[in-house]
Amino acid sequence: GSIVAAVKILSIISSMATRSSHLRQAVSIGASLSFAMAIGLGWYANRLRRSRWLETDKEQNQETTHSVINHFSSLILDPETTVEEANKRRTTSYYLKMREAHHKSLVLGVYPSRLKKLRKKEIDRTLSYWNKGNQSHRTIVCMCDEITQKLLSNARRLVLAPLQYSSDIDSLSAWIPDLNIIPKEDMHVTIALPWWWHTIRPGNNELTKKMANRFKQTLLVEFHYGFQIELERIVLLGGKVLVALWRCVGERETNDGRVIVDRHGANIDPMVWLREEIVRCFITESPDQRRQPLTYQHNKSEGDKAEENAWQHTIMQRTPGMGKPGSADGFIHTTLCRLPLDCLSSKDVELDELHRMCRELS
Image 1 (cartoon, one colour):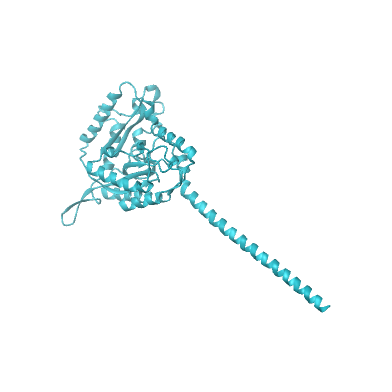
Image 2 (cartoon, rainbow, N blue to C red):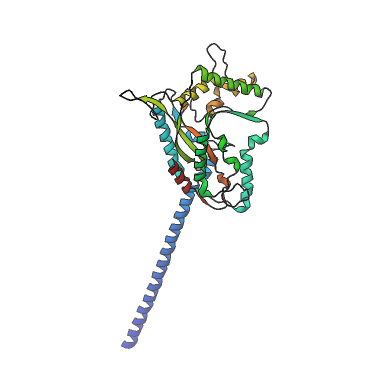
């Protein structure tokens, strides 16, 4: 009887050990699954974080053409700001935009079946005003000289090289249409934008001549002379617009009487002053009333001017980052390329290498 009891006890112990082993295996498998799920969720959350900005950007910007203005809407400088002070504000703003751009480092791939359709839509969006056939706008720019063109063109080539992109709309790899790459000979610095897209009407050529003469008057009457700018950095702004960002150069005198020309100049910042004067000459009349405002709002018929007092003039809205009336903005840029993020590639595209090249070139 004692032998039978001992055998039963051993059988119970063996059964308990087996169940304990199964339990340990279950716990181990459960822990492994939980760990794998945690890693997977972390990877997905990081991927979402690096790409969600695309949706946010589309919600905030309904403009049919790309614009750099909104990125620097808070960079407001007083017209009396010196070169040194303006450059401090500029470079700080540029640096923060560069840091912000680094968080926008992943472009999600698109299913091949949808890719070509989205790319055609991107081209139509870019050419929306042009395709109407009856639209025009006027921008005041300073064209880059040949040496600067070559420098910026070479920098663009190096930055975009990691994409190994193609301009073929049927390509499944990274795609940048020729429309989105500013030709080297067309590179420029935007000064002001006095007249946004409007329907061409009779007298369009005369209006263009009037605006050109008004700009010349601004330069002559206020004694604006040529001034220098220098390259501060190259940034893939917002993860999609490759721009060269500039700062002004001015004169300062040292304690021993020497004159130095650099970014710490003590004179009034010439770009801020120029933009302020252009805006003033286009939206106000002269004391003797010989110079009348030359804006779309003032050229409308009397019946269409009911909301004029509440309207902010185009030149205030579209001149790079212009703020409230009486204040001028300081950012200076040259657009080099725009990435079509909605239809860039059929595979996920990492932008970290492009950001790194921008830092190295800067």
